Amino acid sequence: MSDLKPVLAVIGGTGSLGSGLARRWSAAGYAVIVGSRTKAKAAETAARLASAPGASQTIGATNAEATSRADIVIVTVPFASQAEILAEIKPHIGTRLVVDTTVPLVPPKVARVQLPPSGSAAMSARALLGDGVRLASAFHNVAAHKLQSDAPIDCDVLVFADEPKEREIVITLARAAGLRGIHGGPLANSAAAEAMTSVLIGINRSYKVDGAGLRITGPALA
Image 1 (cartoon, one colour):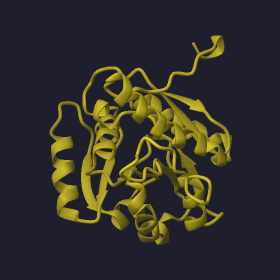
Image 2 (tube, one colour; image 1 turned 90 degrees about the vertical axis):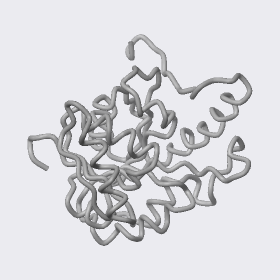
Image 3 (spheres, one colour; image 1 turned 180 degrees about the vertical axis):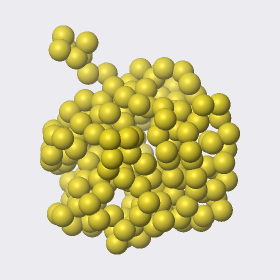
């Protein structure tokens, strides 16, 4: 990675969360590669994002191509697709930092916490990718549809990684997307944010909220 802004690959970038993050990072001056199983679909989404005023270079590619051409790889796919997509990009990761956003939602009861046997989607990713891969976990609790607009988002992002310097990289990405990133501790702690997503879905339903989020309070964080 150079002193310039890193090139970002958003795997699953045609989805709501992926395209929302890609949109905001492109507007913040990052070169973004939208990854998808289908290159044509990725190219279509990338062209739409690139047409926005002030957008940086945004192109589409297959998941494997996007991974091999980026500095940081952000995985934004449903839990049901996580294992397959990680296996697809694993040969191309090398020393790149992978940021996994996966939440283990199990339809139809998505408002019920249902963590996998590994303890979390992040730890499942660790098992799939191996201990040698640089892995962080973040962006679990931000409403995907809110990323599609320019409006401020009143939501913090908890960032998990075993290496604090890798958490700092993701915190910088969160800030670029208009969010506040917070150190959440080691990767194993990702279970807390993943479980909270189901709780927030339940809150949305009970209180008719349009995308409840988390806000961490305290004088040092003001």
